[in-house]
Image (cartoon, rainbow, N blue to C red; front, side):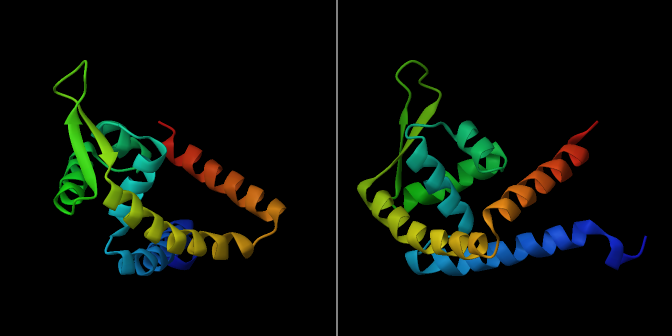
Amino acid sequence: MRSGDRLGGDIKRTELDLMTAKSAAVKPAGLTVPQYSALLALSENPGAPAATLARLCLTTPQTMTTILQNLVALGLVERTPQQWQSNVLENRLTEAGQARFREADRAAVAVERKLADAFTDEERAQLRALLRRCSDVLSES
């Protein structure tokens, strides 16, 4: 199969373009896309442990631990032992983290809106269905 006939390259190019646009969008807030993703997940799931955040952000627990450590160092996240399992750390946005997240989120949402606006409602639903089908095919054992 010739390289121009392979869908993988098209998918990867689109992902790269999206990540480049989001990176540029969140950079003024002093964040990387993985840091922004973790803050987004935490804003929707306060107290979530690192393993849960890793699943939500589609990364490994080890990578998420590093991201969280960096966010703690920036004063954007606080980690405290869970009440019932002291070896599990709950993660929460600090006030500074909430403010930084809101700043970055405005810019990231603008990227998402620009992308979504390029399609009709029907086309977005069709695109999502096609991407789900790609994922389903690739995850078959």
